[in-house]
Length: 84
Image 1 (tube, rainbow, N blue to C red):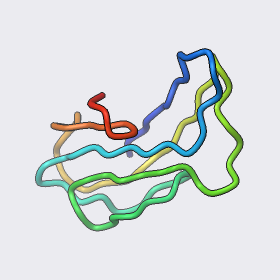
Image 2 (image 1 turned 180 degrees about the vertical axis):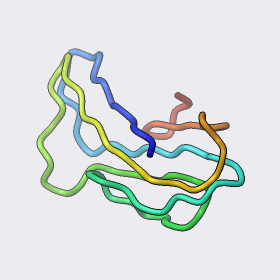
Image 3 (image 1 turned 135 degrees about the horizontal axis):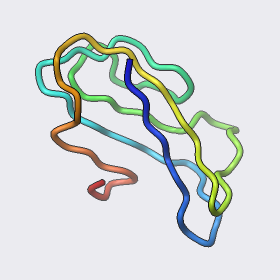
């Protein structure tokens, strides 16, 4: 099982985020929390659910996923289109 945490280090609230992370050779099976738009591939593609509250400055939000494979860290990662 994998986990990610989005931390809002800015001075404004964060709404409507998108996260993508590539785990070459693995297969993403299921997620808990955010919307998964690409199950069954080796790329985790997640976004905030409609109506979720904003992440306040200094706050964070976590999500979890289950994947099969041996990759422990993503080879590529983007958050709202920017490298992470």
